[in-house]
Length: 130
Image (cartoon, rainbow, N blue to C red):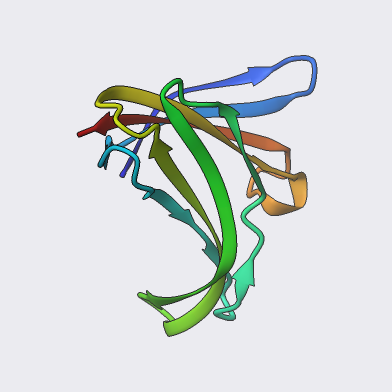
């Protein structure tokens, strides 16, 4: 679902930043669509923090928003479990048809990363509105 395009570090904060391209979101004009669901599961099959997600570039022809909630998932190792997830949604302005996009940043603190340093991932969501 994600292709890693580029990785670089900011010298000021020593923060690795990873840019990722997600697959194109297909949307109907004026209707909300889920672009992504993010969650993390630990070795004990309990929810782990995913970090702090936020919209860093709003779409020009609609709205992107986050929704955090408990969701039931069928996890490969743990089976059916309930986890804390953040879902990312997009909704175009009513009547709009065409291309749009938005960016989401996911910041993980040092205790949430395998590298032991603060990490930021930036996801670009291209959107096709019909």
